[in-house]
Amino acid sequence: MLVNGIVNTFYLFILLLFTYLLGRKIKDETTGIIAAVLVALYPLTYDLYFPVSLDFPLMGLTVMSLYMLLCSEHFSKTGYSVLFALSFGWGLMIKQPFGAFLIGPLMCSLCAAARTVYIQNDYRRLFNVLLVAVLSYVIVMVYYFPGIYRLTLGMGAWSQAACHGTISGTCGCLPSDYGNRSCPRCSLLSLPAERSVSSAKLTGTSKERCCYG
Image (cartoon, rainbow, N blue to C red; front, top):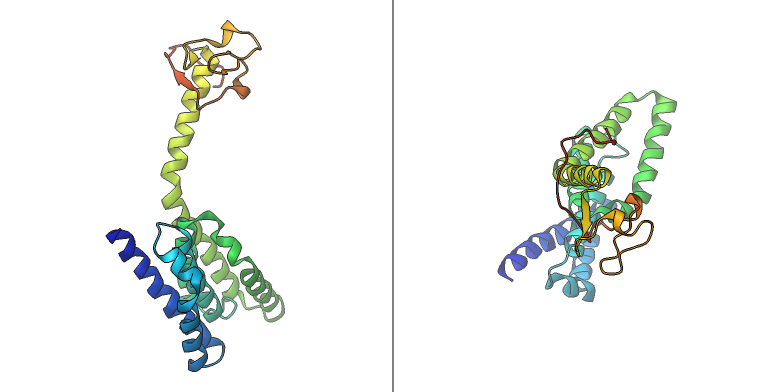
């Protein structure tokens, strides 16, 4: 509870700070203060603050990314474009649907940047867009690549075992025991595409070259 409180307090600070900055950027300082106070008083803010949830950090990071995107002025400023890429990648590391909250403003900025590049030949904006894409991709892959790599290794081992017929169900049955029918005890099917990974385990290995490569 203590760790969760510290983490959520940090994201609450981000939420209120960038809500204030966003309101000040759009209109004036008074608007920013009113916006921050209203967000702080929302019932949803309190509902998401206390439990362990990924949705509360997502609120603060969405506002922060939106502010950075607005300050980049359609990717004309490299510094704010880099900050947007960092905040955008940070949000994607927290939760994958994060990008859906920014798709509208992001598409508007991309269209405005493309129009400027086409009319004024301002290729700096194109460079900033590519920089944002590369930085966001690198940040996300640093976080997700180890899990993807482990999943790939696991699926490769499962495919080899299925190829050699050394994969069995939890009850010890082999694919050849029931033909095309499922095992009545563990529901393991003989067809590799239909076998349940969750109910299967490796029972041996083969030194022969697998037919999958």
